Amino acid sequence: MQGNIETYLAYGSVKSAWVTLFITSIIMGVLYVIKPLVSEDSDVNDIEAADKRSTGGFMSRFGVAYNAMRDNAFFHLIALCLNTFGMGSTKALSVLSWIYFIITVLYCIGLLFIDHKFVRAICNLIFFVLILIMSILAFKHGW
View 1 (cartoon, helix red, strand yellow):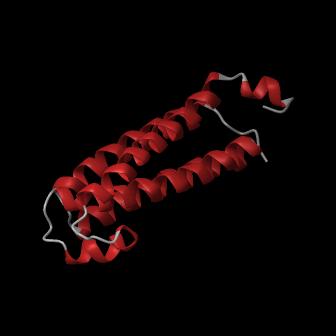
View 2: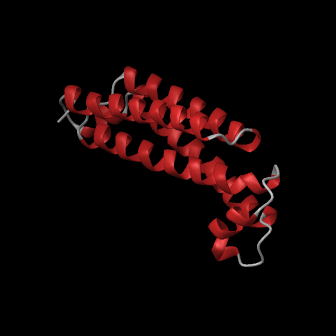
View 3: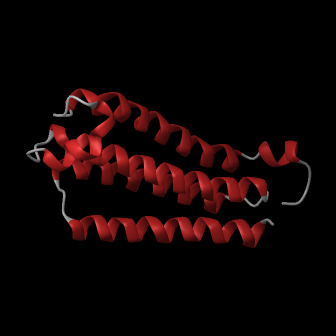
């Protein structure tokens, strides 16, 4: 995929991969707005301390879901930037980005109902492997 940037950005797979990050940022923004509304702490800046003191109800887990969405969006951004700047995005990256997005959304919904350290560890391992594969694609097809 060596060539000029206009031709590269015209590929649908490049746009599709970035759409997943855009949708993730929208969901993260919604959780960002909801998080202070459902927090049991009066100080919005100390959400982490509020999560530690909370009774563990459904509404108090929005902060945990927001943090997971934020972390996954950050890692996804890194992988997409590596691929885009190296002009190495392929259809495989687009497919992996959609898989990553779907698993992230399901994981955040799951965190609202189930908060178990082994479930979180397994999901985080899956996220790490997917990001690693997307980053390897950047160096295989680009750079």
